Length: 207
Image (cartoon, rainbow, N blue to C red; front, side):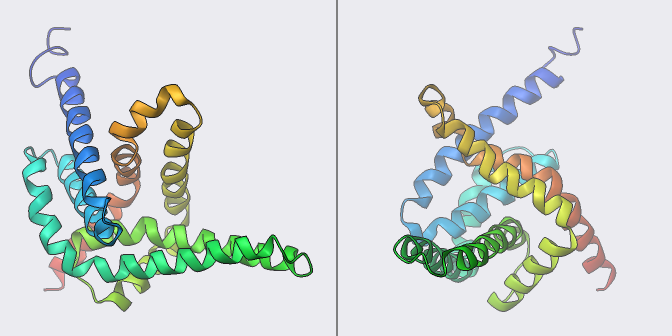
């Protein structure tokens, strides 16, 4: 029992991880305020979470180091995703005034929304760990989204369900503020990081 409460025990490690996630969440929220930088902010968040999973400390200091580099590599893919999401949202809005093709187009838009989120949940961690061209980023994210579909579905659920559940209850808004971004990313990391580690190992073997 004493080992449970030790400084390097499960309790203290858990509290340390929660504190780190809170700091990462607050930093990411601030860095996402200019929408154009949100892609770099999310990639930096996922990079730090992967370092947490490796048991490395002081990940907060790594955030801004990664953020600077991610501005160059993650911004264009992110803006393309934002524009595509905007078109989907606009089409959903326009369908409200046109009932003739509503059912068929609604199904198409739901499928496109599903693909958007499936690509997004892989694009962010890939961008955090690898440097790809924009086309390669989308291609690899799509391949993983389809090829690792069970993992993709879990990641999509966490990405939507955690913030959604917190938004449904006003009393949970403080939790949304301190963990609404970092907690879903942390939960998703248990599904995407084993795949990314396999990719890193394969890349080293091919060198």
